[in-house]
Length: 136
Image (tube, rainbow, N blue to C red):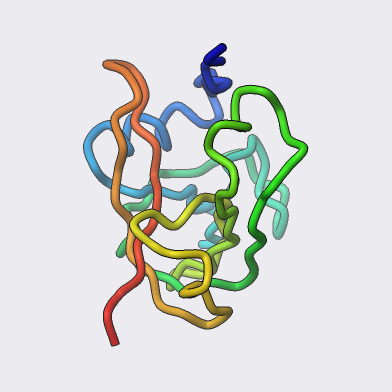
C-alpha cells in the first residue's frame, strides 16, 4: 500500500518561501528593521521582535551541518523511501534548513560537505527544495 507524503500548507508567514520554490528560488525572510536573516519563516524577528520583513533570494548554497540516515520505523508515507537521509544545511547566508540530499549514497554524506539547492515538483502547487553535493 502506497501512502502519500504529508504536504506543507502555505500560510501568510511562509507563502513567499513556497512561491520562491515554485520559481526555483530558495528564499528566506530578512527583517527590514535590523537586517536579520531567518528560516524557518515566522511572523516576528527573533533578534529585534519586528514583524516587518521581506523575502530574500539566497545563493542556494550551503554546508551540511548535521545529518542522519532514517532506516525505520518511520511514518508509513516515508517507509518505502527508507533508508533516506535527513540533513540540516547551514545556508551561506546564515540560516539553517532541513531537507534531503538527492543523488547521493548515504556513505557519501559528510558534515562540512558543500551542497547546492535543486528543486522537485511534487504537484502544480508544491515544489520542494532539496540539495545535492557540490563536486570538490
